[in-house]
Length: 379
Image 1 (cartoon, one colour):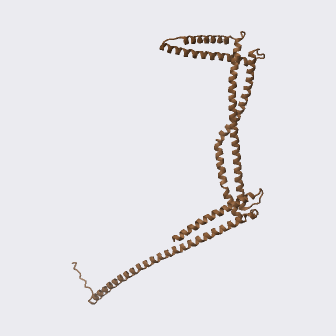
Image 2: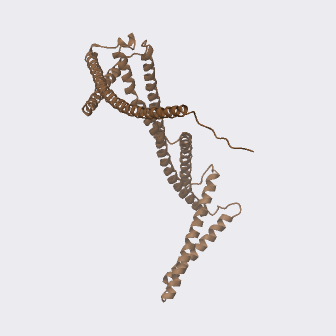
Image 3: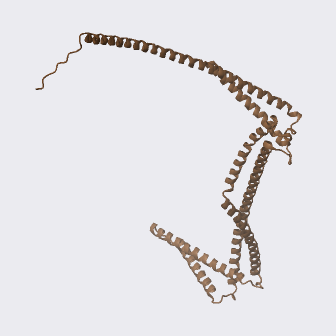
């Protein structure tokens, strides 16, 4: 029996191999047939359902690919916007610094003009005050630098130098800011006729820089607006990279289902159950494939029949073994019945002997006048 079961395993393995080979041929045929189907093929029944499902999957893939393309374009556009914004911000930073220097220059030129003054004269007084402080700190630094002494004096000297330098830098920065404020205020007033000389050139340069910055800021506003729209879209719909990965996985999954549709259409064509429209798509070049598929089908059927035959012989042997087992049980039960019958016969014989003795005793009593009864006196 073990040999027969091993044979069944061999047949099942061959059957699985034949089914796989036949399915591969049918998938190949189905794929070729799908490629021959036009837009208006009059399919019916199962073939029409397979075609509808196939075209639905194609549309699903196309739609997903369009979304991926759109997302990739948006990502590329966002990258371009980021680069453009970065370039313009660097340019703006450079122009801002350049304009700052120009405004400081204009302010210096204005303060060099004896006729320049603001409404209250505060700017002129501030300049004079700062210049005086700067001069005082510079002199003090010169004196400290010439001063000599011991270690302790040198430590004190270093502290004073550090403090004076800090104050000097602070006052120089304040003076620079004073000039810058004056230059910016002058430019904000938009002078119709700038003074001649160096100031005229500086004013012209400032006007040019302001125009460049105005145009640059307009560009930045527009670019940042476009970037904001894309970022808001991504924020609402999720990370573009994750969405693309999800869509790519979906496309891969859908494509993986095409083989099943190819197999179904190929099977309908081979079995001639897909209607005339499907049969009409078969060509002479498909003849070899159809013959191989038919041969494999026959081999699969023969293998299945062989397995059924072997299983039938195994079942016969199993039934015979069960019958033998039941016959043994019947024999055993019959033996038990025989033993019981013999025991019953023995018991019946004992009963018969006892009954005979009872009859003899009864006859004896009757022959001898029966049994005399003695009554006692109650008086």
